[in-house]
Length: 215
Image 1 (cartoon, rainbow, N blue to C red):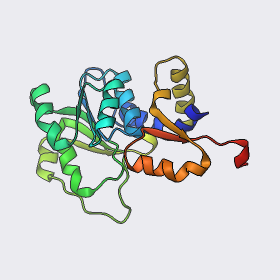
Image 2: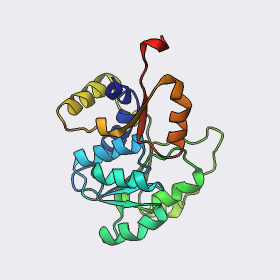
Image 3: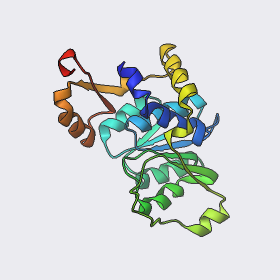
Image 4: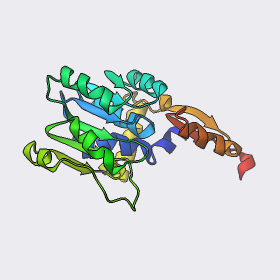
């Protein structure tokens, strides 16, 4: 059930961000910005879709280490740190797809993510911003001249009735690694500890395991 719980939201959202909203194709270079639960699912989606170089970007060192285990080819602490290496590795082309799965999206960061997006590439915004925030920093000339795409994504563009059973079947066949995304399980009375671990970057995903005592 802990595996099924992750497929209620995080797995289809991340996986679909790469395979549906981002439409990652074989041989493409992909950046995943934020490799928590949703980002790690997006990372696996890019791997399964056949991406060539996959750049994981996250300020938490432990999460970067985990990303490499899940199939990332390179890992960086920030977009600024990653940009030069991405340019070198892709011969200046940058990333065909950039999947943004950070905990909170801020308008001032959009142009930074677009900066590592290739000409005619797509930047997928899966992370949520504040509903009251409407200011976005974006170089409109470069958006036009380089024909870049900025794509929003809810639930990874997935169809729950179709995609959740498919993802679970991929897990059972060993093609999608959900079990290792569950860093720790908690009792219900440890829920605050679970939230704190999430905020501290100690989990890819934490799961609450209910018992008969919780009924």
